[in-house]
Length: 568
Image (cartoon, rainbow, N blue to C red; front, side, top):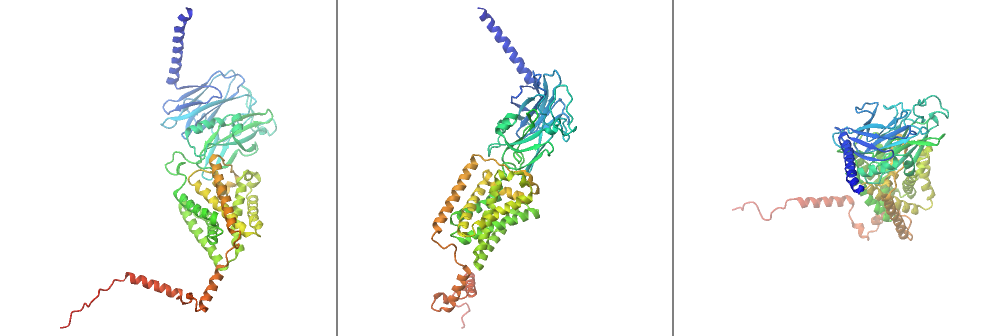
């Protein structure tokens, strides 16, 4: 019976408690947080949100609080009225709270600088006295202790920089000085590991970002999910360059490691799409220009024909290779010397490629020198083969940061291809037709759908056009789309090569000299009066006759009969 009397009272008390907590949270804008737990929060400009962590353990000396949003800035601060030295603003921003003795509660304030509401995710991580403090030796940015990673990007490269860390220390103790020495008892023993994480390809959604940021926030998750690209010591500059991947989401984070205590701490992760999500023009959803689609679609149609029939239609093959060489050279010249818009530069490149392809065909028709033509074809294949090698992780080796070492190595690999196949030029030409022709299809697909395979040649072009790109790490994602496109590319290349080898195995390696054939036919027509072609008028007379016929066609017809009056 006592249970029946107690049960309604207990329900009433529980309901009052829950209602009171809900009213406090809604009226005061209170956000109760727990360490290592992510919370989604909707922020606005009018009502700041107060974030609180309670019951912090006594062995915790530092708490890093961080907030992330998709594209709109969020402001976090230690005070209700943010100032430059006590707050941070950005899509990925954080603050470090150094705990005092006996302190068990931390408080921060969040709000949106924009008038609209912003969905964000908040989390806090705790570190002990032996863990290094990210940004503890900041001398460049506004915050005294700055755990943030600052990111800048353009269409070529992405740069991150961060403040050096300091050694951890106990509550109430004085922080170690940052420039007291360079020994093992100073911050100079710390090491920094830069990690990279790729979001799913062709996914720019807010939910995807906020879900995957959880995999790059704490030390264990970063090491389990991220790709470590570079390790820095304290005497190296804390800024790193990466190749930009417009339209592809990337998350970066830095892990600082103390080798003496074997402890680590994570900075605040930062993300980028290397493009604007909010711009009206040239945003992430309109990266691929119409001119680029037209150019590479036409290029792919011709490349697909070359892939299967290039050696049989030898002049078309030469035109295609001449177009590639001349177009590439003149695009570099137009981009580096002339300050032209992209569309104008692409049009001039197409014109230069057409002229170059026709000149190579004309050279073959007049002189018929196979070795020089095959040298150009071999160099095209060699440069592509060298680009593939440097597209692999081998290209990120520190020795290739030096331009002299890179270009000497690149040129030697490119020259190896025509040298190796100097004794079998037909096989070299068929290989070039199959590989280069099928890759043009990959470039055309990249104009409509993101694929990392397009950066095989794009990274080479970036290194030629941008002097600082030699310092950039060129790691790219390789996900489902890339595997499918790679399979299509390989299937086209192998099929084209096998079809041409089978068709041409009993044919002559190369067609005869066109100029000699034309000259022989002309002499035969002159000397052999029995040949019907002997009686064909010269070219000038034939052109004159054609023009006369055209004039006759447009001449007004005179009416029949006499028009003068009859004489009486």
